[in-house]
Image (tube, rainbow, N blue to C red; front, side, top):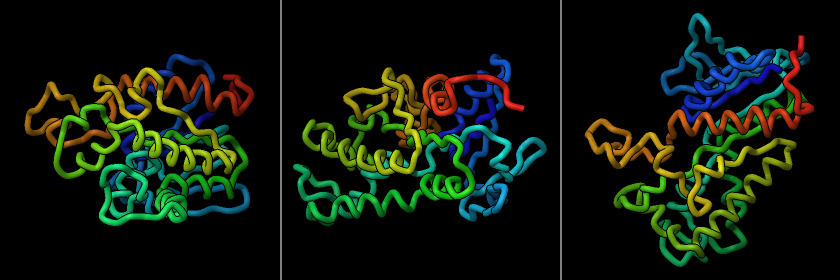
Length: 265
């Protein structure tokens, strides 16, 4: 089994956990390609009949890191993060929000007829969907998407700046509407023949928040350089990555290719 994981910083803890899982499982090979802000070389996808470069997806090449993905070398692909997340939907609404929300989130209101189109446009600009669409032109092999993590539960205890955008979703009505809108985006991805990996159940509170113990930002560490002090409510730790990796390996990708870990020569 050869699985190619491609993502941004959210791939970090998943990559670490999957590397450990690879060392423990005979016949399992995993490759990691991480988009970095300081990357210098575009990711290149190469198929049998065509190839293409993802100009906005930059890899930091090294001795054991290549920027080229030959799709025929892999049995399945997993796209991690890359802008596709519920957090992105909330942040898009800070400009234009659905007018059905009971509390203000954005500067302008959208009538119901325009909400879905606005959400679609916001997600269509993510690197995740650009990458998935490019992969689909090159291969019919299984593709899975791991959305970016749900926001940390402690965001509700913070105020100012980006934190204020999430306060209205403490209430059930607004939260239910947001979750329904995000599910529409998930279903759009599924309609492309892509499996979407849900957040591990044990990490989630009220269907929308990540439990504090799985977050890099910890309220118990308010030191100036900590993730919590910097307001990072969207990056998760190794324990979270391990659960996501387990879901990918045992439940999602493997179902798409016969639920088998047999080595493919």
